[in-house]
Every structure is written in C-alpha cells, then in structure tokens.
Length: 461
Image 1 (cartoon, rainbow, N blue to C red):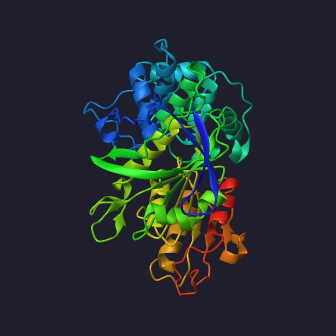
Image 2: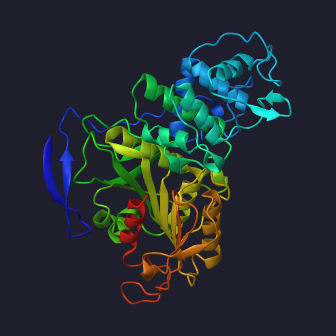
C-alpha cells in the first residue's frame, strides 16, 4: 500500500490518495438478480433484505411468483414474518381474540404474540379484538419487533406512546428514526427490511448502518459500472481522514444537462467544503447533441433509468470503503437538481437529505421522508418559482412539516425553514443572486457559498 499526496487538477488543493498495488485489484461490483421479478426497481438494500429472509424460509411471495413490494402489510402478516424469522410457534388451541379463530392461518402467530405480551389488542365493548386485516403502521411494527427480540421497554403515553421503542431501535443502530414516519403504513419491502435488520443484528452481529467495506482493507472502486447493459463512469473524492473502522458520509453529486461531472466537480466547491465526506460525481449519458441525460424518454416517474445507476454506485462504494449508510446525501444543479430531487423522493428513507439548485422533480409521491434544502432564484427561467415551490410542498408533505416557517441561515440565500419536522427539515431558499462570477446576468447560477451552506445543512442532521 502506498500513500501519496496529489494535486487536484481543477483546484489548488491537495488531497490524500491511497494506491493499492498489484494483487489488490479494483473492486468489481457484481449485480445479482432480485429475489422476486417485481423487485427489479427496488432499492438494493431492500432486495438484499428480502433475499435474506427468503433464503431463511421466513418470507415468500404470492402464488403468481410476485412479492408486491410496495403493497402495505397487515397486522397478521407482519406477526407471521416476525415469528417465522425467529422460529416456529405452536398451533393455537383456542381463540385468543374475538376476531382470531383458532383455525385461522394467522392464529398461531397472533396467539403466541399475545401470550408473550407483544400485543394487547383493542377493546370493543366487552370484546377484545386484534384486527388482523388492518394495515400495520411503522410504530406498531417497531413495537412488535422490539418486544419480540426480548427488549424490556416501558411504553410511553399519549400520542408519543411509541417513542421508547423507536429510541431503542435508534440506540442499537438498527433503523434510524429519520428514515420513516411512525404513523405511516409500512410496505412489504420495508417490513422485510426491518425484520432482516433485526435478525442480522441479533444473530450475525451486523450493524446495519455500516457498509460492507467497514472493518476491511479499502479497495479501489472501479469507477466504471455496467448498469442496464451500458457502461457508466463516475469520479470519486476520498476524505483524507477516511478510516476502515469509522464510517464516513457519502455525497452523490449530479451534473446538469450541459456540464460534465468533471466541470461541476470544479465549480460546486464540494471537495473543499466537504473534506470529511466521500463525494461521487456520476456521469450522465451523452445525448449526442452536447448534452447529457439521467433518464430515457417515456420513463415512469418512479422508475427513471438512472435510479439503478445511483443504487449500483452507492453499493460499489459501500463495498469498497467504509461509509455510513444512514448518511447518504444527494446534490445537484439544473437537470442534476431535477434528478437529485427525484432520487431523494424515490429513495425516501434511504437518502438522508438532498440539497439542490435550480431544479424540480419528476415524482409527486415520495416513498419516505428525506431532509431537503431547495435553492432557487424566482427569476430563474430554466427552473421557475412554480416548480421550486411545488418541490418544496412535496417535501413538506412527505416529511409531515407544517407550513409555518422562520428565517434561517444562510441569510444571503434568503432561506426559511419549515416547522414541526426536526428530524427531516425542509429549507427553502428563494435567493436573489442574479449574476455569475463574470458579472453576467444569470439567475440560474450556482451562488457563492452554496457548497458551504449545503454541507452545514447535512452536518446538522
């Protein structure tokens, strides 16, 4: 292994680089088939969790061979998943709830959970019911998981009854509180991910927020991936302080329609401002007319072509070096902002935060909460005030913020922050900077100080 210092070609700074000799070949990222055919566009982490439970015999699909990852899971189905992941249960010998007959398929799981104090049910007049067909929310699922794995928790009271269970998950680094809304229904893929995290933490001593590269000798990411049959490339800036046993955050920064990844690496200023982060600069596909794209014509909003590139890139970097999977951030300008916003929405609960300049989004319904900093000049004709406000409102809704706001830093960008969503704040910055560094009128500009503002925003989460 050889440590050298080299000068970045696009700025007067020096960075530490690690070169791995000879027998340490670049990391080769092997794509694997999804566990079910309808999970092809799911986040790779969810694919891995479902595959893990499928291999254990804890989870199965429907008779048609599909998994329906985005469908909600009900209370009975979730308890079945919990107990099948832990082992078998004895058949029910009597009705344990008024709506759980002993011959129901779910009775053994529900009755075992009641006997062990994992569930209490609901009182309806003189009857006690379980409501097996009711979609389960995150808070209920977390409570069942925490109690199933032996934790003794004193339940909270009132609307925040679930907080002690959530804090226990957070304490063990099993699932970050910022990655879900407690009262939101949980999908089948996220339910599987929750249980797989618990099983692997309990049985295999795996800490879910640490990437596979943690605790191992660093590899050289290949910087070239084949995704969807196309060769894709990216640039990577490594923090000088990177350590195999200490997870570093990761920023994935997307360029616009007319600037390459090398060009935005020069003007974003992230390499200086985010010196403690790994920073990946992926390259879009050239369109043949001097511009780039992150999608194919006719792509569905929730299935843009390069979501798969983002997933593959994060996966390869995480397998090569030690990153904190709870601190994955996306940045973009112009078309890159449009794509970064879309990625943050499509990978809600995975992407910790987005920070963008001059771009909207393709998605309207996000898959989970993600903190957001949205910077946009109201005079920008390439990214109108209407589209920026629409993006803001989508994030306010997904993060369950209120519409009340107050001024926040940086004042130079006229920023406000919306209330009542401290874990996933939304900061909206309708700045009035109209000139580029040459003094030309250009409201679509990347303003001075933007990188510093974004990194301060990320650091506060």
